[in-house]
Amino acid sequence: MPDVLSAPLVVEFPFTRSLGPVQSAFLTGLRERTVLGVRADDGTVLVPPVEYDPVTANELGDLVEVAPTGTVTTWAWNPSPRRDQPLDTPFAWVLVRLDGAGTALLHALDAPGPDAVRTGIRVRIRWAATRTGAITDIACFEPYEGEPGPSEPAPHTGEFTDPVTGIVAPARLDYVHTPGRAQSAYIKALEERRTVGERCPSCRKVYVPPRGACPTCGVATAEQVEVGPRGTVTTFCIVNIKAKNLDIEVPYVYAHIALDGADLALHGRIAGIPYDQVRMGLRVEPVWSEGARHVDHYRPTGEPDADYDTYKELV
Image 1 (cartoon, rainbow, N blue to C red):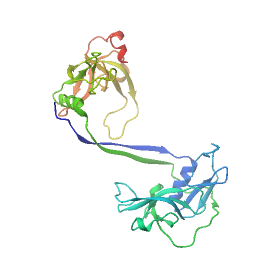
Image 2: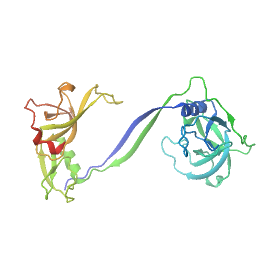
Image 3: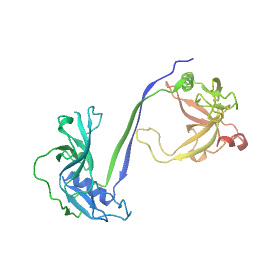
Image 4: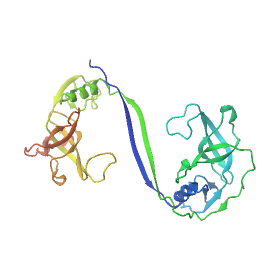
């Protein structure tokens, strides 16, 4: 049995979204050290504000300003902060109902230990030194023993100079990936510029990449079968939006490719042909990355197109 591979894997991308008038006012307000909520149809002041009433689904826009002080409604202690969390020392996650608000806001509370935190404790916002129009403009909450803010929020137009109209929220997932016996063998074969799958002992289908079991029959697979290197485009899409940190000019084509001898199509980029000439049935071959153990893209072989009946079950 080959050694099973294991490696750290990071999935990361920036999520960019535009803001409507309510969210724009809320985030711009934080930049200006102002906390805004929105009044729901039943009179409840929602903080953070939402654009539609959670009960009636009516559009909301009656903005009000609430106090930067409030009361902890519930909490949980975080003894080991992780990367990019609000504080790098142990802190409490808290839900805080700001004075004048009817709902609670989730954030961090800077406290010396869990014994210093309790439901009902009074807190206030500690503003970040540099504010950009994001929830991180609230650096955290801190205990507060002063006078409470007004219980009745003040009306606010939501108008600010240079309003924030969009945000970029980075998403990241770190984990250790262990592909298992079958895919470890598949990856190691790629080092030799070979593509191997596994054949199901029951239905005799060859799956690439191998999964260690047949998804149709549910039985274990072990017989290795080398496939390709040539294959047939079964279906494809034209990519017109350039991905960040991906050095490929748009438009380009991403396709499902049924390698010769395989009963499952894998995906790959098509190059060496104008994007508008890629078609179902196109015969292609791999072009390997220099010094890497994976296929960079597939290019046309010059053979006649495959007949649809030969790949229709793989579309």
